[in-house]
Structure formats: structure tokens, C-alpha cells
Length: 225
Image 1 (tube, rainbow, N blue to C red):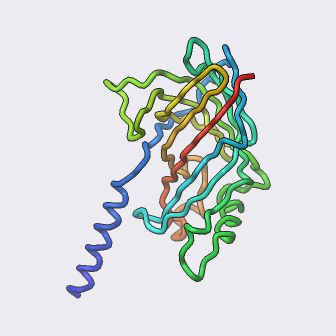
Image 2 (image 1 turned 180 degrees about the vertical axis):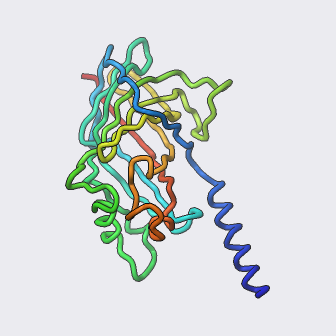
């Protein structure tokens, strides 16, 4: 019994430590907001050079899985050297599970990949894309804004639409604009259940074993029109 207690305590410690070692900011969420008008100089997203890296885990940060998503299209605009508006469309059907993240001998990355695309999660046949529409962008103010993201320059808010549900999220970002190019980086976590990304019905033991938070690491490159 004592040995079991020690194992339980060690497991709890590992889970607690994993939960507290987040490498990304938790995005703030609110109801959908009015979308900002696209004004000023416009930049088209380079769908080849841009990428979304995602990461998800089981409860306590165990068994991390990760992979990528591709952009289908997008643009954003700058006015007076500040991000003024824009929208991005992500091809959810492009979701890939990196095989190196599935190390168990009895599991395969392709099976998880197909499962994530199924009605249990993203239901790509019915909802092939996710959309993000900018609602505001303000310069990062270190006196009131906090971020794990080193070098954050802005706080960006936008409506994220997944599976037909639109929720406004706010996260720190690094934004650089040049004469003919621009790039945006953001790294944050969101609660998947906010968009109804549940495995089965509420309270399903299989769903309980998956962490609600998943991480998005976004790198967008764009060129001036």
C-alpha cells in the first residue's frame, strides 16, 4: 500500500509539473466581435511559406502529439505601420500528425490523424476549413500586457471559427512589416471544448483523458499586393 501511495504521489507530481510548464500563453476568449475593416496597405499570405504547428496532450501533459496545418488563403493590412485588419483560412483537411510524436508500438500516426478529422473532433467533411478574422490589434504594452512569447509586439484579437462556432480570442504576437513583406508569429493555447471539439458525449472517459488545452504556433509570411 505504501508503495502504491508513493507511485500515486509521483504521478500526481509529474502531472502537476507538466501542467505548470506551459510554453505558450493562454488565449483570452469572449463572444465574437465586430470584424475590423481591411484598410491601408494589403499583404497576401504566402500559403507555401506559412504554417500552423499544433500540439496536444493527454491529461497532465502526458503523451504529447504534434503536427501541422496549412493555410488555404489569407490577407492582412497595415495602416500607419499598425495591423489594421485581415483574415485567414486554414485548410483543416491538411492536418498532419507528425509520426515522431507517436512512439507507442501499438499506435500509428495515420490512425490518430484520421480520428482527428472524423466527426469525433474536427469533422472535416462537413467543416473543411477554419477561419480567423481580425477584430483589433494594439501595440504590446509591457506595463499591462503579459506574455511568455519573447519579443511580443502586439496584442491581436480576432474571431476564430471552428466547426461553425465563432469565438473571439486575444493573444500576444510578433509582427514585423517591411516594404514588400510582412510576417506574423503567435503561440498560444485554447480550450478545444469552447468549439465543441469533444470526443463523444460530455463526461466520456475517453474525452476526459485528453487535455482540453491545445497549442497553436502560427507563422505567417506575406507579400505586398
